View 1 (cartoon, rainbow, N blue to C red):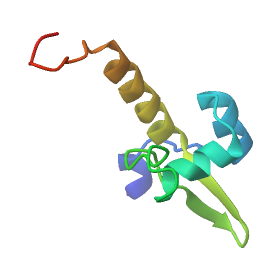
View 2 (cartoon, helix red, strand yellow):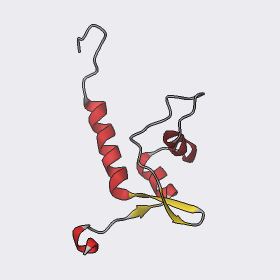
View 3 (cartoon, rainbow, N blue to C red):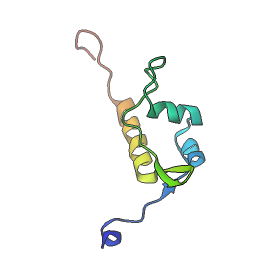
Length: 86
């Protein structure tokens, strides 16, 4: 029943995520954890990995795609300047 409701999911491994989003391994993991020394690296919107084995993780492809699309939308928005002007 659940298989009928949900379309086929694809799990991307870390190397595939790196290639897809253009970030290194350390940058990907920096987006997942808050670090007081580098607070700008943390991104609460970055998709969380899922466990696919004892010592391996992957990311759901649709979540990575959605994150990329959101980043594109954010970059296309006009920036607000001080004083409320664009």
